[in-house]
Image (cartoon, rainbow over all chains, first blue to last red; front, side, top):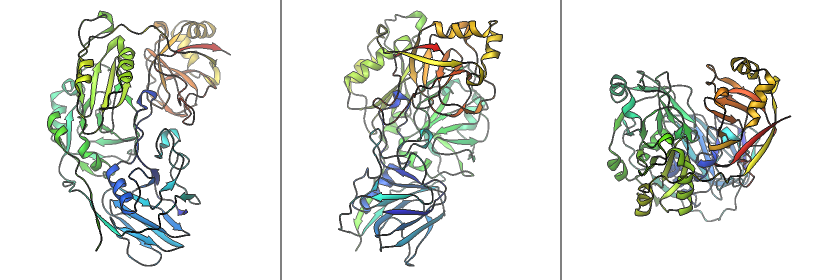
Length: 304
Length: 214
């Protein structure tokens, strides 16, 4: 059992994505860095798709009346345990009965993931445990956690291996985000294209799992209105005001704005760590080079 | 590009990459026929197929490539559009008043009285071309030209669930309450999307809809 004493800014129960319902208007969703959630699950002996928490910017205070084996991956947050022991990231943590885990503000980056041995018990909706708050389904009651919520935890194996995970080399957060030119890239005015691929853009406050709104040099589309087309997370649309929007994990499946570029899948985990105020730049890759980029793997090993 | 006005075309559809996992396929009037053909083949490398306005997005599994079977489909000329075999839904709806706050203005703009406007809306059979924007939101083609009208300049902060609306050449119905920029003409109490239902969406691509004013 896991009790929520204080809720964070947006604590969402997340597991695997639910691809395959795009024709019904349902995005695939799921953890914004699936490999990081899978690594947290591996640290507690869960299968990769077990339900855990995706925590954004400021985290919750959680109490485990019967104790728990947990792990945290992703961006480092300030965090404390009621027993006084340090809260290590990327390691198996064994919490004693009645221990409280307090996850405060993020230190750098934006999101972290918490796995609990046995997994959080929530109903499977359309093949996934992941919350989709825009339509109010999935996860825990289709919404972010609130103080007073009590979540069931699946049966624990009882066996605890203390493991350590090493995240893949991420590349510097300062290096440009790699994109493939979008289907309408040629319809943009030259000046805007040059700005887009050379100038920094800032992430604005109007940013969530549906989309990351950018502010920077305007990018003008030189052609008329476009029929709606299918879009993916990482698609960068440009509305008439010329300020690009990077579609997120819970974004719409179709969009009517021209697409200037699409973030390569290997850099999508970096999108999950961008927060309002951060700046970023873009660099283009050919499709073939983007396809050759293997998503680097986490390494999990027994802690000596 | 295959356009519906030059249909039927002997050419295979043009396609472009959308990132390294998406293929945007120009399917014109044959979008749903292509959609059904791709989905029925159950190709391993395809994670999802999303129909839209005259195009399809084929989403490949991460690390997957374009197989010979997919390439062959992409090289097949655009087929005959399917005969309208989708389910016909008869949707009761309240038009105008609080349920359709933009109806009076739109009727005036179309130089009709309200009851003529409403009978024009409900005289035709609409087709679900695709779903998007929100889970279960249908893009309905078949709107008479005289009723077509651009989106509102300023979107509403909150539109009621079940609102029937017009945006350009499409009619649509908002499954859930939320912000929306289309012109609201009426409202239905039908539940358009329920994740616990099978299928969760009331309307599927290719289905047909008639409105019956309450």
